[in-house]
Length: 333
Image 1 (spheres, rainbow, N blue to C red):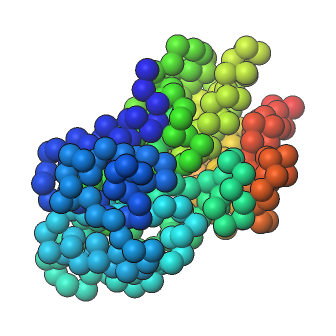
Image 2: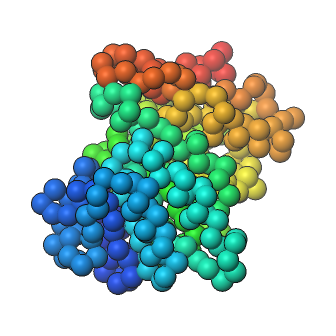
């Protein structure tokens, strides 16, 4: 049985083995520490010249990685916590994502990996889900696999095949969790291939039945959502969930066949409510199929406030099973 972390490590190690242009930069990623969440543990022992410990300067080593990408390498940057992306935003927004458009023929095959999200009691500055700040940046792909995906396969696509900058979101709560495809249970998974190489996972809790509700989600939201889906299966309430892995270039024409025929739609994400992924997805759905909706689309997210350390308070702020269940029941009542 493979969990999220093991799959991710496998994909990263395979990328290093397949292409000697792949390098990794970050803080405390060299053995024996192997990074804050151990994704790179063991990598520097195999490839000591290609795994580079950096000073605590996210802007500095992210900018350096951009230069390495322009010069023909395929760098991977590890930002220790997603909250620290703010420190390298200038390099991402004003430099790395601009080079290909400003200078003809230039490619920037750079992957910026970072753990995101709460649930561990790390407090206000180490628990945020900030990817919504980057969804509208031209030239940047934002990729966020969940438990219904094979994260190792997706990281290989980003590292080995993509020629443009990728922000790769790894939700912290998923690292130790078993992938859905590896589990015996109520949920079944199928994959929709896309032209970008980043698949959409479709999960059903009652395969073959017409769904009562369709839920769109990504990344960390897959954990509470799949728990809720298993509970609803026991009550014979059919739920279908769609999980894009590339979240800021969603091909709606691929999703529409999965959405049509069900007029009840919920959109979930761990990021804070308002001006977020769910807002954009809801707008896209309304534009394409508003006449086919039975009820307004419901959005479920974290509260728009600072994330506390105390577990009970943190749980109340973040996306959780209860919030998702309430939204689904509201549509069905």
